[in-house]
Length: 627
Image 1 (cartoon, rainbow, N blue to C red):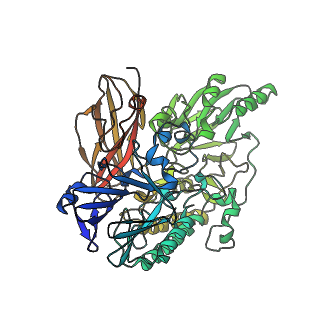
Image 2 (cartoon, rainbow, N blue to C red):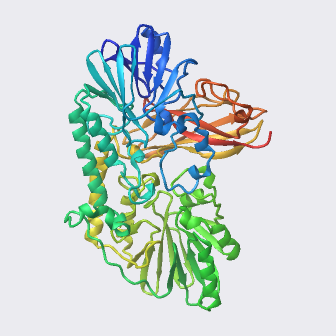
Image 3 (cartoon, helix red, strand yellow):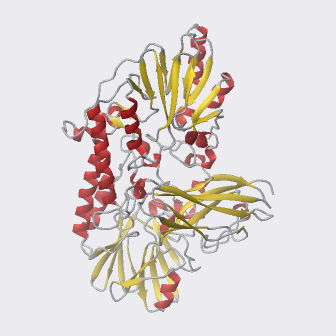
């Protein structure tokens, strides 16, 4: 890869690689800020730097803190609030709470594959000198909970190395790191860290820097204008989210500042469901004239008990079909027990079925380790008769991309079971990790067009007792708002489409987690969604333990516009099968025998997208068995 660097003052340079890397130079010695990527070494050599004395990291994300070989004697300083994610990162990868039932997004999974040796920690107000520079630390959370900014006074100027608080004038690198709960869990906190981000940027602004140097982005010589524009864009984007948000139904107190807005969609009144339906928890149940039951979702053993009580009371005879709307744990946690108790046919949308039959292959919000048997995987428009009702299944990428919808016709009504995709207040897109894509024929645009076409008399949400519907005017308003969102969110990111900044699964590894045996061969596929209107080329390179091998490395493919593509790797596992720590990735003392024998191996994947290097952008987990 061609390397580039720029000189900001007599003693300060910035290497522009995966990220912007600060280089403070004093003769042949250097202090580095956010070093990552092997190409940095070329710049250091060109500058005549032979000794790296000190390293500072603004935050713990792997794409800005991995891939550079840290010299053995260099001091390494990190934010005090994030030291665990540098020096003990295995506590993240080995803890099930960071793997399953994910309702909190902090820390984000963009973690180092292996720990590094840390010598210093920094917090608000820390000051120190290095060579000709004076350095002050500001706590600036937002992009991560423990991010810091380094104010570097050098050559009569002040430079703020601000991490990923801002990318450029009015822009941020991505949105999903700002998912954070305020009165609720992170899961319900779309753009929830925006106020924290603003406070941090105001703190940086008040320090009067000459320039902002972001980790991802461009050097900003007019910090005030860059920050003001970002605040305007964030406020506008958030308003377009709130105006049709389903969360207004669940948590109205979160949105009191928006009350009375005539440019926001009013919240609908509910309507009573037909008397042949029952609702328990997240489960809807249809009772036919012959007393057979059709059940949708089972997130708790209590649902099973309630169905058994209906049998005992004579309201139903038996359960004959079971439909799973989507993979979230509060809908599938008890499916195994349900299937053992009621041996009926299980049906799910084909895209949902991929997740619930093999949850280890995915890393998604609210994911459950429960494996669900699926007897019939449906495609768009598949229809069948269940007693007096006609059932028609659809892929329904609303609340999550991995979601199905079911139209049920009978008894003079057209009922649409939308999972968790709508409430009377609008669309349920309050978790960016759910892959709520923007654009024509995807995400909620696709869902609303389907509702517009089907014209159901009743829409059902798994968490809401009343049924509801939408008027033609309300559907048109939601569609118009989504079109406006596509534009304003595209303006918020340095990409040619909003989905790159909103969809943290546009690059993903499949399977995300798999078991591998010594002397075996593992298959790993890197899947990429091209959200652009033109073809895009992607290059992928798994970063393997040094004793493992791969057939093709790196590999490249070109993906058509608005399509998905993939790159397949065959990885040979050596006889001993043990983790061999990558040189430059784990620094300081060599790992202990216990560490060397860890069976959970994290494989980062370096991605280059359309000639833009993204660093160790995604990862897969290999669990070693036997040996």
